Amino acid sequence: MEKRTFIAVLISIALLWGWAAIAPKLFPDLVKKAAPAKTAATTSAATKSRTAAATTSSSTAPAVSSHEPEVPAQPIAAAGLEETTVDTPEFIARFSNRGAELISFRLKKYKTNKGELVELVKARDPQRSDYPFAIETSNAALSTSLNTALYAVTDRMEKDVHALDYRYSANGVSVTKTFRIGPEFQFDFAVNVAPATPYRVMFGPGIRTLSADERDTQFFTTGNGVVQREGKLKILAREKSDRVSIFEDVQFVGIEDNYFLSVLKPTKSGDGIIRRIDVKSGDSKVPGRKELYAGLNAAPDGSVAGQAFFGPKQSKILEKYGLDSTMQYGFFGFIARFLLEALIWVNTYTKNYGFAIIVLTIIIKIVLYPLQHKSIVSMKKMQKVQPKTEAIKNKYKKARSDPEQRQKMNVEMMKLYKQEGINPMGGCLPIVLQLPILWGFYGLLSRAIELRGAPFIWWIHDLSGKDPYYITPILMTATMFIQQAITPTTVDPAQKRMFMIMPLVFGWIFKEFPSGLVLYWLVQNVLTIVQQMIMNKYWKDHPEEIQKA
Image (tube, rainbow, N blue to C red; front, side):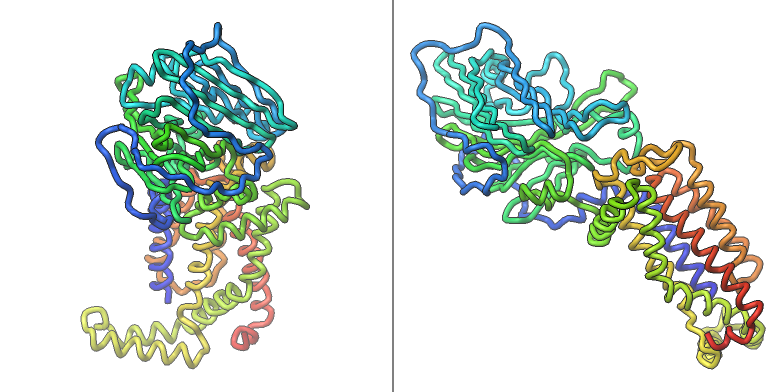
């Protein structure tokens, strides 16, 4: 039994260690695959037309007209640079008439570790002009001209909707861009170019500028592409995506990270597109980085229209806009979703997600108590019959080298276990059951925005980040040593020394894990220690009860 338990624990350690190393890269591959994407070696826009019925927008903004503008006889442009700010309870958006682009989108309810509002428009090199809703054509000079021109802007309010109309005309090309921004994260947009020419509306590269602590953790993934077609989501890993990937009949296309999402949902357009570029770092010693752009090709009449979403990956918000498929919690996602709902409910009473994790851990402990109790009883019974098992092992000294002798020994051991009412696998089951919960918590704490930046007490200011002083991993390691010391065991001295290494291995692995996950495991250990101490004392006073258990 002890060897099986030891093997099960070693496998568990290997899985945890492997998971910690490859989980950020593994998530994109765990989702259901959509139909294969077409790849192209050029950046010319697709000409296939598609006019889809719009998914009912929950935004209060009215639909945006996407008619083709007439090319005016006289040039249209603004005399100077002009920025428009749209301030809502949820976000602050800034549009510039330079290229008629979105240059800032800050979320009021989400902050960085420096206390600043989260910015969903990535910082740009001063030479770049490709902010969200930039126009990209096969003619680089034309693209630059349209994205640096000063558009004439009309700014007005339509009830609680901020309406922005941008117009520009020169050299025989006329462009209009219209935006209708209401109080919600999703807003309407339309772009028209006349005469009709192949182009695409793009945003990127990547999504927002990461803080130093987010860049340094292996559990944070950012800048992956997302595409949904026919209800099936496809995630394109930033490092592995093709130079250009084209998708027909997309429901939405965009870029994500663990906590935030930016997508375009077309009502009229050509194909969706994800394009990769290689960004060089300013330091020759620092490797470059691959970044993705997302966008929509224009329909044959030169227009693109739909809704844009820039916002947090919060379950209720994403469900409202039909984007909930982008919530990917990993292999045990269904467990993570259940735990998240439970934590949110408990937090309504605790007002602190750290204490909510403790309460939920206690609840999980109570639910698993019958199985854990049987496991402890099984180990105690095996300790009691250890002299008999040693006698059987001594009887079959050649079992290691003789398969026939080993088979006979196993049959006799199983017969003994049956007579004593012992389940030899009883000690492994609780460990096996804990792993899905552990992975569920991992997926939850590394991707649920509700816990992003959620403080606990004292030095822990973010349950989704690692413990900055490694105090909880040290305490977790200590409790594992205590748990081993008081748990009944029948292992020989050599195996016992091997088991003593386990807490150190777990502590080393967990030191980089989200502190909320370490907190869960620490509390689980403390509760198991209390349970074991109570049972040990009871059995000492009532030895006859062991056989009855």
